[in-house]
Image (cartoon, rainbow, N blue to C red):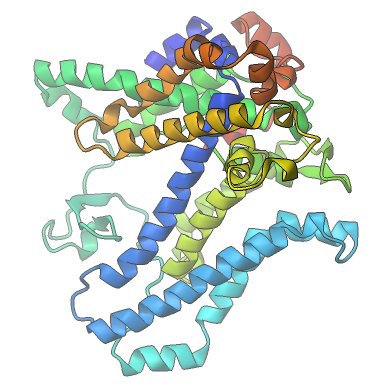
Length: 433
């Protein structure tokens, strides 16, 4: 309901208040979550208690998963960087860049079926852990397994005795007490703040001028869809949805024709590509064997690569963090931020890094973690009230230089403006995933 109200009252227009200070900060925060998830899954393969598996067998399997993890990340990063090299023809370089992750995953899956690996694992009484999907299209049970398996399928759960949860779970809403409704109302405020930031900032960073998109924006209508989806889908046990970083900009990049200098020449904006993407995402629901060939190490590598690729793309914060360890004489001269004094650049970067660490501290805090979206929102007044007291206007203009790009963008104002600037339903609306 909150998201729908945001759309009704055109609140997405306040996305104008988010400058590059928060753009790069939030993008880095989200990307590091992907990296942390990938590495955590990999570590769990070594430390997780697995019934019936000897420690030596688990350790050997963990080493194999580690090799697959490194293989996916290294090959994907190598192919992702071919666009800036002189290898092959421009067409081949762009093809390798667009399909870097797919190629890396295919190589890793093929490598996991090397016969000698299976023989060694069988000798130790173990097997390579792969994605496990149910044979039938049915709900899960409500018993959490406490490990990487997550929620069990009812057919394989001893606690539920084969009884899955119902398809529709919204009926439980009428059984809760008034105090539960009140606390749920309070908890919905920071969650809505997260949706607002995540949805609008993802759309904003996907549509910056350097991305080359030409069709109209889709902010208010996007929030309306988010409100409708998140009001209906959870009633059937489905998770919340929102546009996301970093793969929304990465998807737009995959549809782009790139010049030799790395800039976008043209984007093939269409409805076919997102339709095929979501069709392939849904295919394993009906053909689970398509994903059961993928080892867990490949999943960890995929998550880590997605995070690394997002951080390394158009992220001035990461560039300035590297400059903290470089002599000021070696700093690039063609960047806006190089116009400020070394002291100001270092101070601005350290403040931004402190905010990033604060995001993580609130996210991991057991009692106040739900409030971390409000911490993100508080960055807006911090940027406009505190930073001007520490830096001059000229320094902020150079360090927060995205303002010049935003001046060229069609940012949301009212629903009427949104409707006039939007085509019926272009592919950016389909990035809600």
